[in-house]
Image 1: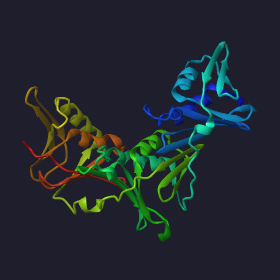
Image 2: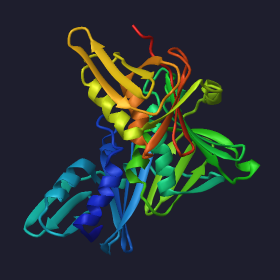
Image 3: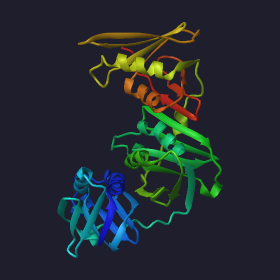
Length: 364
């Protein structure tokens, strides 16, 4: 294999593929990125056996072929090179000679025959969405997924294509984020699937502002194809809990708040807390909201925010991180805060088809 490729192009390709590579693996080849030169393209593939990412960049190919090279090492090398073009020449023993201006490297690779093949995909359910739209859905919900391995069904984001709606849901049992909008797919396309959190994280880094994303789903796998990037992932093989039953039917108070104003007040007050299990308190009374926190060994913090409110006085406590997550992942100027009392679930909504259910903490 011999080719010349621009530095910027191969760095972008490596950036899109190397982040899924495990830092600990029993298979040495999984630390590598597979490089395959065909005609005028260089294909780059990486995998951790759960997620596979493939992309391609333009290249001047003198001799076709393939190999695998240590992904993070060559990325570090290419990033520091002072020239705009890189020549890669790989011999039949998978030793890569890299030349760029006055720089010269020899990197030992591993045969592409040892690299896991690209998963064969035969999904018959295909959906198409705008990239920016899909990214917004994932960004508005994925933070609520659980990281507790004892509940694997919650370690991902649910994609539900049912009843003429697309629902994107994440929950860890203490809070739930959901984006739901109308969708036009036939009844034979209905179903629910859980996409692992790691896959969602990769998609959020790669999805663009323009263009479509093609989602194809098989029995145990899902693929996402957009631009020149293909991501194939195993699905979480568990049934998702009934997320609709945790949505409260209504609340006594619905309060409009300026998202950024409230978010910054909560963030400042929460700086006092030293324990992740600590809570902040929101006290609603006529025309103002008081955000407060108390830490036994540190002291206390209070901040008042002017709001339009004329209902009964209500005081409720929350985990500050759980409260801040939707506020920093939404772009709306205003949100609505729906509460009934200090023990009932709270609802946060905005002008999008989004809702967030959060359980309060007991006030000490």
